[in-house]
Image (cartoon, rainbow over the protein chains, first blue to last red):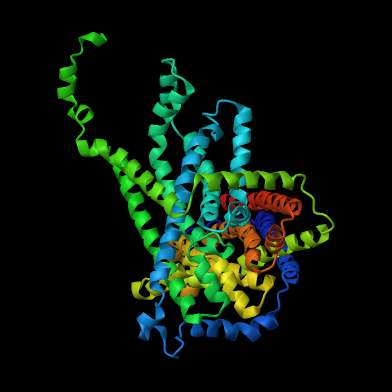
Length: 294
Length: 281
């Protein structure tokens, strides 16, 4: 069987081919220019960041052997051969870990509560006045952009060393992050219930309470749980600046070269983060499942 | 039908679910809220919160804020600009390095490339454990290896992003359309051809978008790794906080905010350009 393929006359084909080639060439040129720009930026950056490949190659062995060392006990044996010796400080570490979890819990809850109070002012469809919306938005943006650990550094000086500074830092950072996410949920909410309630002569507060909140709570809970997950990680390093939690133990172990302690604490943190991830994932599924059922 | 014709008892009988919710359903929400706040109060007590400490801290904080005004770099503006440049360099280099190394590994973690679960599982757990360790911890580890300075910061960001990218890229690859890959296999392409011509054109724009987003968020991470000594503006910030030079501190914070906003703006534009190009092609 033969298939008839219609081939255009030579001069028409040449014009089309030419246009095609030109388009491809232009695209390639643009890609190449972008790539060249990127490489140039990388070179400038590597000068700025004092990148020294020779240092890296000389010391890369150190990186590998560092992991070798943190997996070796003082007696020269591998850590997993003697778990009791490896986790000799488990009592203290578990206590610090509990403190870390408590810091992230309290920080998340306080942050979520503050974000809950503020987000209705920041959302476009519920904010009572434009100037209020502008102010609240800038406030949340500030709380979100300044890293949590910078707040912790300042709070350690204001409130003294200890977990209080860590909690407040996490709370403020979470307020900023959650406030934005919460207000986005509110902006996606259905406004018809609000109209219905306003038409009965209700105040702004009643409108929020009875028309908006029932629509958005599941989304809020989901984001708050996600934030808790992130905050556990945050809280594990708050100790680096003296703001409580297991980070304090870790930074001492790393700085003083207590090798097997480093791996033990790291393992504790990683396992905790895993468990929290899985648990909050399960809880989120339950919450959304329940919402779908009713 | 006017409202007073409705008999409440009849309504009750017709919609039992609405009127007679079981006690467990009615009590669940308040019980959860009470439990949440009980843990909160326990936490506040356990973490040494006291009203007097809180109030004195607040007044202290008020003084600090007053002393921050107006922001003033003093004579160290050139040093700070250089540190800011260092921070941006750390973010750019670290993210690029992570993306370069994560791409091949993410192929190993994607379901449609490596069908065997036994092979995929260790790769995924490996990426998960890297992600479980915070960037600051990696910075401390790298400082032990290559010494203090921005280079340790680059490597710290590279390692911690490597974990995140490995996961994100493999998800992007799993989301790619298989039809194009099949087409290339049907025309006699090898496995490498399938990846190069079937997968990469679909996946690259997504990946480029993610890399840009991470450069943005790493500008923030790069500001803080300086606090443990890995270079950049965080180092200056931590130093000025420790010596209580509040005017310089507020100036540095302002610089960070402006830089982050600028990077956000630029990468937002770039991301739009890349995704727009995909929509056209």
